[in-house]
Amino acid sequence: MKEILEAMKATNSAFTDEVIAKGNVGALEQVYTADARVLPPGAEMVSGRSAIQQFWAGAIQGLGLKRAVLVTVEALPAGDGVVEIGRADLDTASGGLSVKYVVFWRQEAGRWKWHVDIWNPNS
Amino acid sequence: MKEILEAMKATNSAFTDEVIAKGNVGALEQVYTADARVLPPGAEMVSGRSAIQQFWAGAIQGLGLKRAVLVTVEALPAGDGVVEIGRADLDTASGGLSVKYVVFWRQEAGRWKWHVDIWNPNS
Image (cartoon, rainbow over the protein chains, first blue to last red):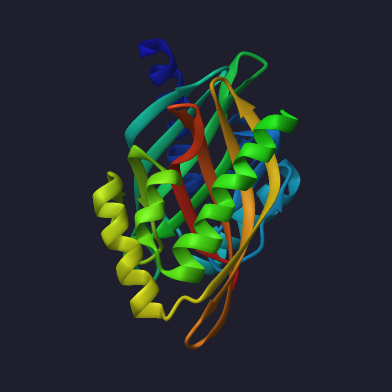
């Protein structure tokens, strides 16, 4: 489990350091599986990596997302996958936003990635 | 998987028919594992069945929740568990509310129950 947690950290860093901080949505390939699902608050479910890239490009621009910090609260083994409960702090153009999330992780080509991703605000 | 889906349906019916329609929060014992986690939008994470009973009692009263319809969109095998993506339509005192959800299911004493439960509104 320790090695899996390390691998998860690397993927989360790709999201925070590449996708959010640098706006490089191409790096989402390292974050989400090809047939991943994103369930964002206030919008319909988004399916598949290219739709997910569009979603995040729009969210980064629309919200002025500049920084994200992800903290794993719990990682529950789930067969070949892991169910993670976490917290995220986001800096947007209109201020800070604290959310909690659940991610179902799966391996794709030897890399741990987000297969199902859902979150909501704490307040 | 077919039998598991049937068992999941029975648990979902306990939630919609007993807990929501009749306001019987005691039936949440059949729905959530003892150490389940609920991550509701606009509030902090709720841990453990008795805190979850309090949460739902408050939500049913506070929102005037009268009716819930749950539809499984996808059920992904996850070792001993299942990751379910679904949609829920809720009738509240102030009108209808459509949400999407992710539930991590686990067996407890031979019954399939919600171990991690998170949702958010579609609009």
